[in-house]
Structure formats: C-alpha cells, structure tokens
Image (cartoon, rainbow, N blue to C red; front, top):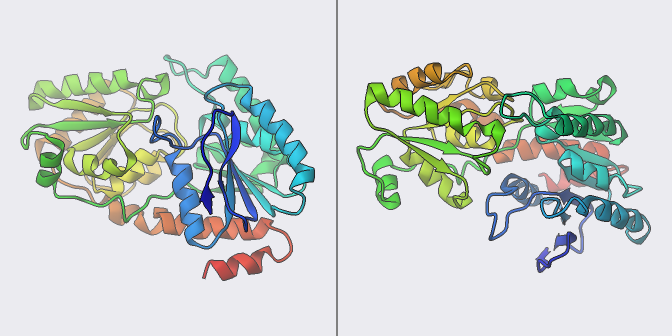
Length: 360
C-alpha cells in the first residue's frame, strides 16, 4: 500500500494497494488541518489491514462542496467499466457516501452509517431540522439497494426499513486499547501543564459547538456544580491531536457528554478505555456503554441533574472500571473480527475462504 499525494480535487484515491480487492469510500478522513476528522474510519481501515485485508481508499470531500457527491457518482459509474473485476466488495462510510458509491456497478455494497445520516440532525431545541430529516429519509430508503448495512446503535437499526433490518448488523466502532490506556494522573497533568489540584471536566467533540453537542448544557451543569465543589474548569477539546487524547483523558477528572443525538460516540468509549468516569445524557448506545461502569452517571437532559452527578464524581475523584466493562467487545481487534465476518459473507465466491485465511 502506498499513500497518494493529496491534491485539490473533491474526489480522489488517497491510498492505493495494487493487490486491493476491497474499496473503502468515505467522506471523512484526517489530515493536517483536521487531524480528528474521520480518525475512526482511518483506524478501522488500519485494523482491517492488520488482519490482512487489502484495500484502496477513495475520499469524497463533501465538506468542501456538495458537488463532490455527484462527481463521485459519475466517476464510480465510469469505474464500473474501468475497474471491472478489480473489487469484490465496496465499503462506504456514511449515508451520503453510499448514495454515490452505489453507482459503482458490480461489487456488493456494504454501508456503515454514522448517526445523523439515519436519524437526522437536531436543532437547538432538539427537534430534527427539516432538511436533515429529508436527507435521513432518503438515506434510509436507499439502504434497501445495499447488500448489507452496519449501524452504530440499536436506535439506528430500529429506524431502518424492516426489509433492511434483516441484513443490518449493529456494530459500534472499536477502540485501540494499545493507544487508549491509563496514564498516571499527576504525570499526565505535568505534561499538559495542568495544576495537580485543579478540578477539570473534559468536554471532547470534533465539532463542540454544533447544536446537537449542547455545549451550553455542559457549561450550565459545570456552573451549578461549582457552587457546591468550588472552582472547576470545563476543558473543551476539539482539535486535540488524536494520539494526545489518552493523555488528556488520564489527566481529567471526568468526561461530560451532553449530546442530544449520537450513534455510538467514540469519545465515550475512549474515556472508558482510559478508566475516566463519564457523566452523560442518554443518546445512541451510551446507556449500554455505561451499564456496570462505576463511577459513571446517566442523566436526563437537565443541568441540575448533570451538576449533581458531577458533584458526586468530583467530591472524591477516582478512576472507573470502564475498560474492564467494554474491552472484550469493543476493542479494535474484537470489532475487526466481527467486521471480517461481514466482509466474508458478501465478497462472493471464495471470499469466505480468502478472508478466513488472512484473518488467521
């Protein structure tokens, strides 16, 4: 596999492997300007390559222009002839990506949905915006044209058409347990330049200010909690380099997650792998993730209730048992094994035998 130089095009191969038989198509991928954007897609690709899966990666830069999707569709349609017989499976990440990838005729299409592509995007008041609701409806109907689908949570699964649910798998993204490990709190704070005695609540999101993340609710909860425990700081992490997140999570006293809509939030799973206590509102699969985790709290969408949970966590700071609760099912390796099984089911004749061999 060799990296391909990034250019200004809206659609291009960013990684190619002469022996690839899987084509990964995504509208999210990290770069120097956006180091956390789509990092979970890149890590999943890396975990599959570690199992011997050989793949090319096409990046549709929809964040630059909506024209990227029809351009991609046209290129895939042409690729139906130019790449005939090359790929045995196409794996698209995100519903909009799948709309374009479906124009590549021949290989079966597997789609991993992310959250708002199936559920819609909430406005400040929590209602689903009209435009995102229409987009989600189109994507859910389009799912019937795919060979198989993956949703991050049961909530997303339940929103798919009944005929699509029969071939859907609920499979959250995995977490790299070798990267997200517990560091010594005092040493982590020293490296970050944080005061050893400061109470610090972490608010981590790639886009912390979009409405559904509800940063205002996190700020209100911290303001209320500070009335009881004294000064505390809400540390907002948006563009922290991905490899530095374990250090941040080891240094903080807890993670506060207030989103109104999620699929399976990677931030929560990463915090749990670092044994960081979590205070969160219910969305996506968070209730399942926090089941059995202590100390951690699942709260209603209310600043006072969130504040009470923060007070409980901050009164006697300690680490949680989060890693022990999720590692066996949600490590990157465990998820890669399940994804490998899905690949093998849809790669046509010989696919199962090939992937069984590379999977060990």
